[in-house]
View: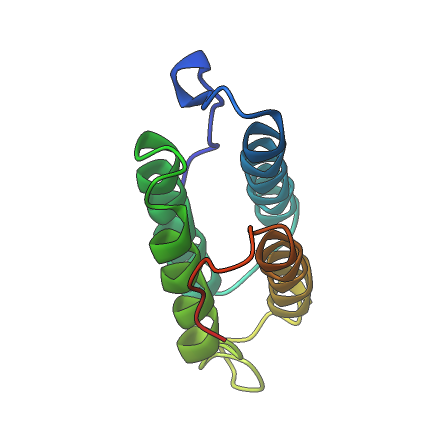
Length: 123
């Protein structure tokens, strides 16, 4: 597990896009800190790893592929949450499933609302 580092090469030149991207990095880094501070299940560790990898790809692709990347994040959350460990002996009752879903779906919703009219977005 690793923290995501913002790099100047991720700047798109569009202030609103850069702010959204920085916001995503901040959410994931906050989750990273929570994961370091709390005992959690392996499922949560794997989900964070997938989210970090998707974010790296999203930032590297700049804004051009952002809609596709956001859809990938949305689908990952839909298929992964709640985590299989939730309610099982593997669950550590860390509440990070809820935090992850709440923060990332809020970010996705905000990102969807900020798109220009006519841009395709999966619901």
